[in-house]
Length: 77
Image (cartoon, rainbow, N blue to C red):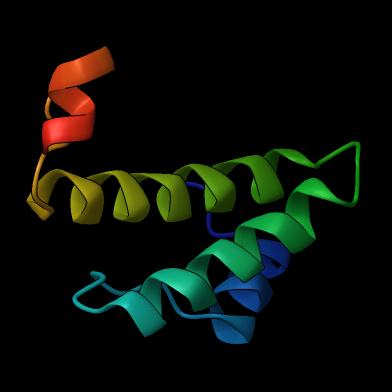
């Protein structure tokens, strides 16, 4: 298990928690965006980004699925 101080600092900056509301999703997305804006990431930053991305993915799985409809059917909906 790699518990480097850089990873611990990332966790302190924005502690990852399961997302249960839209506000939490937005805050998590901002943390992800700030990492992505850095460009080249360290292995600690990549691991942290992976954790945040997993939380976003798990939250999105709980949302109402978007139906696969197109054209006239989409307009009717």
